Image 1 (cartoon, rainbow, N blue to C red):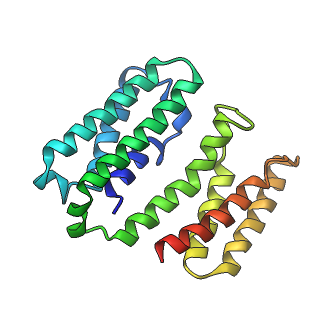
Image 2 (image 1 turned 60 degrees about the vertical axis):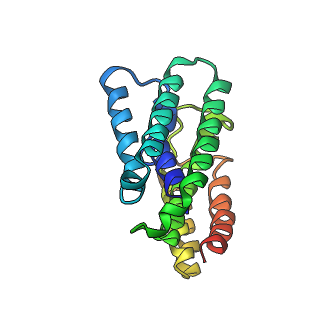
Length: 203
C-alpha cells in the first residue's frame, strides 16, 4: 500500500522535468506547488482526507517545504539529499497510514503498477541528467517512450511486443539522431531488468 509515496513521487517526477524544478521562480513555482498538492491528494483523498487529515496535510506541507528548499540550494549534492530525504519521509508517513489504504478505490496492484510506470520512465532520466552523462537538460523522450512501452507490454504478458518496441526505439534513434550514442544501451537494459523485477513485485 504505497498510495502516499506514489503521490509524492508523481508530484516531483510524473509529467515533470525534475531537473528544471530547481530553477522555478514566481508563478511557475506556485503552479508546481499547486500541482504537488493535487498529485498527493489524487491518490489519498478517498482515505486520508476523511480519516487523518492532519497527517495528510502535515505531509503535504513537508513536501512543499522540500520544494521550497530545492529552489534555494545551489549545490547538486543538496538537490540529491532533498530527493532522498523526501522519499524517506514519504515512506515513513506512508507506513504510518498504510492501513487506511485498504479501503481505497485504488487497489494495491494498481498503485504498484502506476508506481512502476513512473519509476521506469523517470528514474533513469534522473540518472542521465545528474550523474551520467550529467547533462541537466538531457532530453530522454525516446528513452522514456521505449522503457514505458516495454514495461506495459512485458507486464501484460506480451514479451514479443515488448522487445519489438525496443527494436523500433533503436531504429527511431538512428533515424532521428543519425549518430550512435554509447549511452543508448543503458535505457533498454534498464527497461528489461526493471520490468522483470517489477512484474514479480506486482504479480
